[in-house]
Image (cartoon, rainbow, N blue to C red):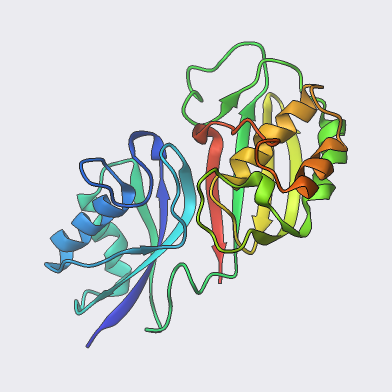
Length: 245
């Protein structure tokens, strides 16, 4: 009997070309599929909730695969972790309905972007936060963020060449907090366009450093022209935090 297994996955994206399997380039998907094959003796297609780009990290990526294996579900995470590099870890596994699809069943996703805001860069956080040496004005960022919330066409914050049929997304949450030298942006939406978070952060950092007034974010959004947004923030600061179902 075929089973549908849902995995919750954490990974450091530094050494990977991204989630999606690519020829001759290391990917998170391929590494996990290889581990599943080692455990179940089956070649499976692993479906991810989101195709994170090269260098992007995940605290709660979700994926699913179908298998005829009868391995108890509680034994799947340690079994897969045994065959995975230390930069990828299976946190949880659950048997779900055959209709479950990690991507199409998702109701929302949450991303965070980490900025190290101090004069000196970090030896420790160099692959996990974007270094901005100039002071950031959080009051200006807090003034700009509400313009992004709600249901909008996020064409201005879409990667050039993207093929999404619709650029309309509902951004349910957009906030920024500071803890010491770390500034964290959090975005929650029903869907995200390619590079959307990184383009929003890059635009907001121009606001925070005084290069743009806070009201410019609303103007850029309304223009539906991605030539006005950004620059795109580096992948290293981006984390897929959670997928909601």
